[in-house]
Length: 200
Image 1 (cartoon, rainbow, N blue to C red):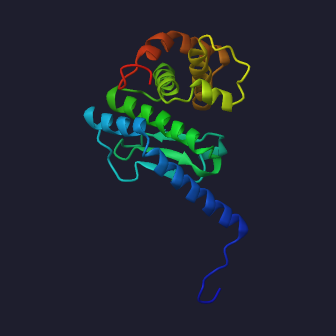
Image 2 (image 1 turned 180 degrees about the vertical axis):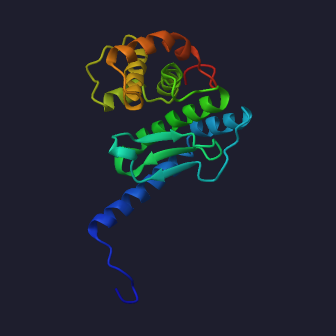
Image 3 (image 1 turned 135 degrees about the vertical axis):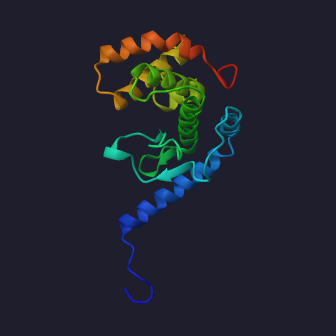
């Protein structure tokens, strides 16, 4: 060990590199016009960003889920956070979409009385996040290898698919329960484009 301290293992170096890359992705996201607008909108809705590390990088999600980010309201709602997971990073463009997605959740928890145990409430914010983040743009769908999709109503179908996937992570529910819940809220929540006015 000596003066220089313990030797850093190759595995630790790789983890450190991932955290550094995650920080770079976060910095790029903070330059994004849509991200800047949503952060300003939170203040307009009465929820200014409560701390400097509101958007942060963490190593990996609980339980090792294959998710790229999360919004955590916090136990007391005093220190909410948007998280980008370093171990599950995708290209920078998709990391920006992840942060946009989680910021829509943050806006919804600020603006509405969202109950995270209520599947309809969560389904609604998932629909809005998938719709408004840009993650269902045709070019992004192509990157995900949905190249054979029909472009007729592709945005709505992508939003529905990705919302259902998010609900599967959040609730122990059958495919039918998830489908029925999405059916009950989809049109109203898809039409709610706040704070943008239209789907950006």
